[in-house]
Length: 176
Image (cartoon, rainbow, N blue to C red):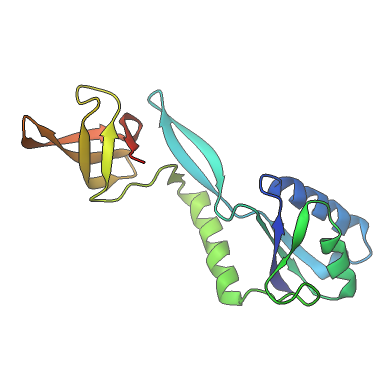
């Protein structure tokens, strides 16, 4: 069995996963299919001082299918509602992704189960706006990011002097 990627209507990935799994189970070719996955990761965000976990798709609009490709399995997948088609190869003869690509995606899935990622990622040197606390409406540059504590160190100009402050992720927002 190889891994293939199909494009689904955005926002319907989970529904496509369920309906495709149902179609596979009702068919005579269930043994030609493996997993049907929507690649998601668990993210953590701070709201009202509490950590909240949610799920984020890291390939929105795509579903991974482990299957043996033949005419029958191709029709089962391609005729599923809200699937636009296979990615790679030609529409009639789709190409599987390499095992290295599949391993990289599966490893990322396993990593996020063990350690959830923050919903917003910050990088040193990035300019942010402080939205809460004594430095509200000040802009600052990110110096350090601590994802475990959900805090970052900013350099803010106060009376034309650079001042280092430590703030929670929820007290800043990215500038557009």
